[in-house]
Length: 85
Image 1 (cartoon, rainbow, N blue to C red):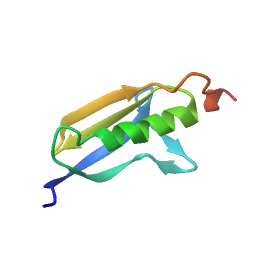
Image 2 (tube, rainbow, N blue to C red):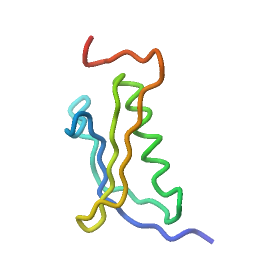
Image 3 (cartoon, rainbow, N blue to C red):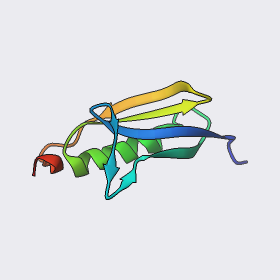
């Protein structure tokens, strides 16, 4: 049986601003399964972007205008700050 899915407005941020890479804003609508791990894919997405940028990235998910999930991930050791280059 397939788990019930919900749709959320999601975004990735650096210093409180939506990330834009190559002209593409990292925000939109995302369908996620219900359950305790529903935001795991957002966490992974943010981690990959943090590794690319070399700085902390915050992910947010809202539903009907209400914040339902948020987290900040750090880049791993040795990641270079892409914006500083």
